[in-house]
Image (cartoon, rainbow, N blue to C red; front, side, top):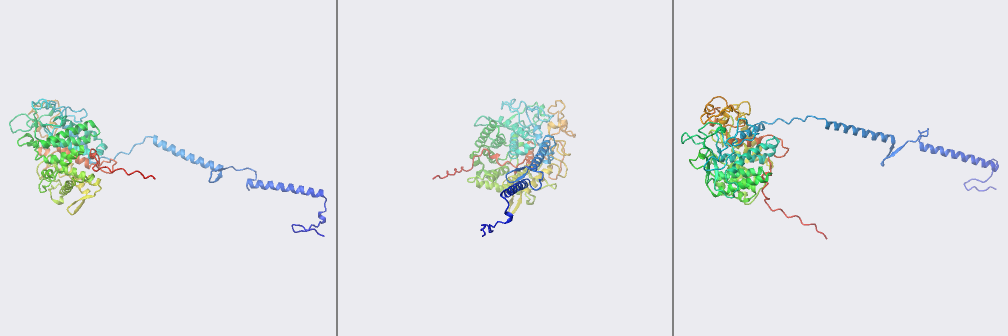
Length: 621
């Protein structure tokens, strides 16, 4: 019988399996050993890989996301470190090795002329001159002003001489300081970028320090102001004075009378404007700024209470700087007082409809409407208050008159455009704001400044232009007008002459100016001793750098004659307007998006509307 194999075969024992148990045991042991050897060989193949027949094992690095060969990993890390060290070394060399910075772009013509125009004020200084004054032919002068006068009996040393003479006219001097302060408030960054900020501030302070001497600046209420130091009227006979004599300011030995006024609203309001505007310029010096504000308050109060013109008929003031009214100064001074103090009572005066009417705001048919001068501040006031409407918009009760001023400013800007024939232009392109009368340039520079400044206001307010009736003009039209007028003054005219002394290759050489016309030779020339220099046809021995002369006639003609002041005499007020126009037009990179300083003028003005209350705290269950 056959036994059943559970794996499917029989349990029949064949002859081949008849070997002894010992042989079978030996065979089993030999097979087991062979299988054991085979298992070790296979395991070594699996661990070493097919190429590692020598039994060498590679090393790996596990970096988390993958496993890579250790050698490759080390090479990669080393390469990265090496490149990083090389780049760092190169950067260190670049930083440590000195290299030249690219030179700044050359200044434009307006900036070059501006540097010179400011120097004119250094030449006009009265009193003890600082060592860094920069005008070698000038020296200390007017050292007894006020002290030698039996009426004043106080020091009136300092300030500026007005023109080619040695008179200190406080009315145009104050306007000049207001104008310079206005430019610093608007274009401070420009002045700083060209290195003239300290210089122009020093000029302003020289003027305001003197003005503080001309009245009792420590009092809250005053009853008089000094209007003028020196005298120019020669109609009363041959008496030595600042027009009868021709001598250096340093050599003056004749009496210099002091003229005071007890009813002079125009002068008081203009001086208040000057001190108020300067207080914003010097707001970082609180003590001095507060002193200026205090003096401005006393002056404006005096002007409002003691009504009258500072230049009554027949007075010395009326012969040279006659004021036609004081209403425009009330608007002008009130606006500056508001910006300096934030007190709305001043804004109420400046925007009173009756005040605007008396100032001539509605005399649109006047031939001098829109002509900004040391006498008529209305056009400047309207631009200044249009600024308030553009940037703060105070609303009721000021909006109606501010809107009127804004519209009239637009009209004034339209009048500057030749297409509207409001003013004639010479064949050479100079606008005739004074209708062909002599000394035109002082009016031209003021108009150029207002046009350029107003264009900057509109740009800052994101307004692309303005309307003249149905016609819309872009702000570039205003700048084009302003540049055309200043370019004319700087030499783009039929005479091919610069009317700013020291600028360009051709400029007036015989300026009507006593100090510039007499040699700086140490010789003292008396009252009449300098007339040989006055009448000389030779060029001035001293260059009055930066002085803008009176200008050409209505036919673009010009005579470089020292004795004809209608052509060759410079003035403080004219140069203030020139500086204003030049700084507004100068192409100076300040890093700011806007040309004007939008906020500084409002630094003392409180918020127009109450601050909204904070939001309620979050609700908690």
